[in-house]
Amino acid sequence: ASVLGRCPSLSELDFSFGPGATTATKKPEACPTMKMAAGPQCSSDLVASGLLPGLLRELPHLLEEWRVQDSVEICEEDGELVFYSSSTINVEVHDARLEFVPKTALTFRTITVEPMLNTLLQAGLRKWMKRRLSRAGIDLSDQSKNQRLAREGSITGELATLDLASASDTISTSLVKLLLPADWYAMLSAARSSTVNYRGKSFMLEKFSAMGNA
Image (cartoon, rainbow, N blue to C red; front, side):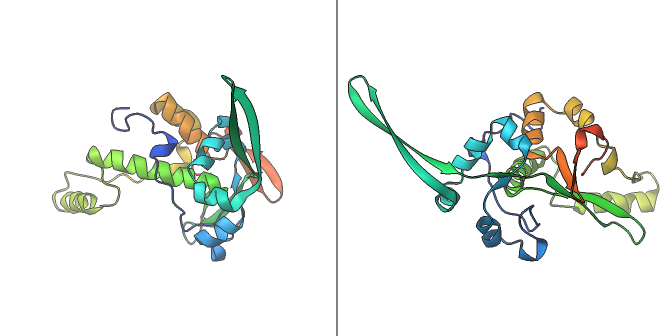
């Protein structure tokens, strides 16, 4: 809690497209133009969190491209007519897509391909968390400290590195909930997909709490 600080509002996040695929865009076509052309998609978790309307409002230029209908409502307030305008956006709800990519010559790593709006939110949260960690002396973009300590350990034998087998696969949802503040856990839960599609079938990841990156 002291390192991450308060959970940011959507308006404070810096959203951006990453290089990866989405549920509507394949990897060879994974550029911002193709992702925007595919229209908006999100997970059911993002819808249930109530964050979707606010997230869309943070993307006004995309809303111009995606809106399918405008409407105006006229109300009388204090004897005066007030006009309220609204836009309709069709957002498709997608399960994440479960895939397996090579980890070594003999093993595979599980990953999920997320809906586009989820990837935007995840990227914004990643940048925020990265900055907060940097203030606490943990710079994820600089490996020189790790390299220096590894060299020192090799020379003196007084330090050791720890490489756990399938470390990421043992990070369960319950562990994240235990370690993080409640508002951070809620935000991260909204950004991820708890349901994945594999070979045409849907699976709830909550039933397999140790699936880690999946």
